[in-house]
Structures are given as C-alpha cells and as structure tokens.
Length: 88
Image 1 (tube, one colour):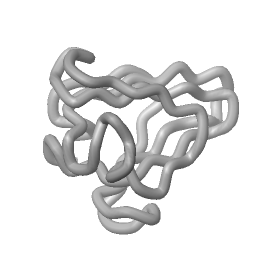
Image 2: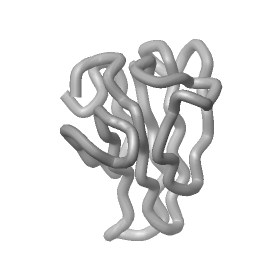
Image 3: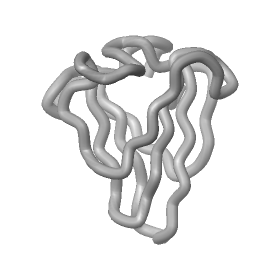
Image 4: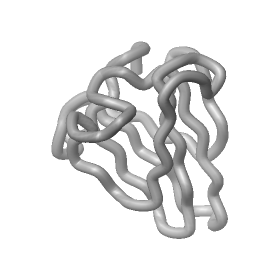
C-alpha cells in the first residue's frame, strides 16, 4: 500500500498492532487489539498511516490493512514490524 492510504484494519487473535502517522513509529500512534472498520474517528486518522508494527503471538495471526473503510479496497498483510511505505 502507498504511504497514507490506510482506512481500516483487521487484527488477528492474540495480536497487537500499532499504527503511526509518521515513519519509524513517530507522530501520533494508536494501539489496536481488534478490527476497526474505519480509522476516520481514530487519533491516527484516515489515510494518515506511515508505519505499522505487530506483536503476533500465534503463527497464523496477522494484521491486514485496507485502503478503504469496511475492509474494502486493496489489502496487505504483515506479521511483524514494517515502516515507511506500509506494506510496499
């Protein structure tokens, strides 16, 4: 996904995800332990994520990021830290 294109997130079981507005986990960050169908009402904001990190406690768990609300549009998944252009 390009930088600043995340609008919704799915978080697997036993997983913690952190989304941040700026590269290298800087700026406003928010912790997610469950799905959020629209980031527009969150402190990290809609189309504002530049870095993401996941603490995955199960081998099949992961985090999915979507370009559109309600888990629509292009998606990417990751199971560990990523920074810069999220899921590029």
